[in-house]
Length: 186
Ligand code: SF4
Ligand code: SF4
Image (cartoon, rainbow, N blue to C red; front, side, top):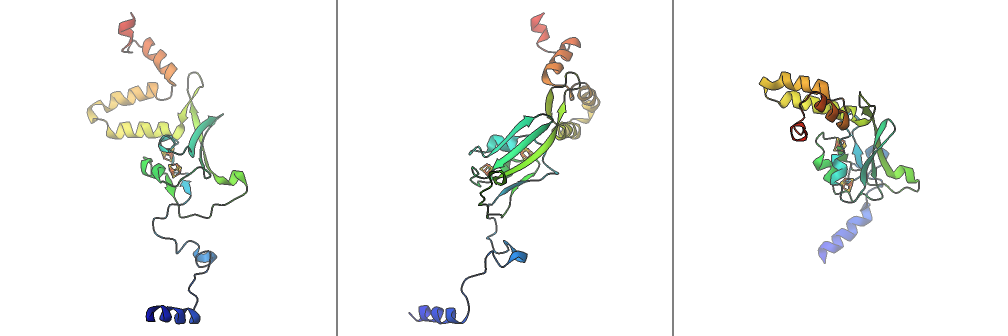
């Protein structure tokens, strides 16, 4: 009883609420709890467009599709449940849940987080393979992690195959007589 009375009296002398949004424009979101899961955001520099996050998104909010010369990654905020799975799974640390929680908007296009990355086309037939960034990352990972003794062979194989689509790779393997299935076919 005494405690309640004390609180009531102190409320008369100073406000018990905080200003909104959270302290004014300069300090926006300064008072949101640590770890709050808000709007997911791609890192334009780090994302390689591999699509791993889209596979793991259980609500279908995070998707990608290829259009012309581009791979387009999108997070539809109207579907996102802010679970953070995309952030956990990303091998490049390229998608993060920010603390931005004021997402109401009546312009549909603004409810989408979007990133466009250039696609790499097969050097032989022109079919889009994947993003340039992903191909570069594949090459970098193989060459940094492979056994040093076979690094030169790997380099040679990469120079032959990495920039070809799967059909052209298969054809090249037949031509070079190194495709394993060739032995069963002839
Ligand atoms: S955010 Fe990460 S997992 Fe998603 S496409 Fe980009 S690199 Fe891949
Ligand atoms: S936070 Fe969850 S629901 Fe939202 S895009 Fe990421 S994986 Fe999908």
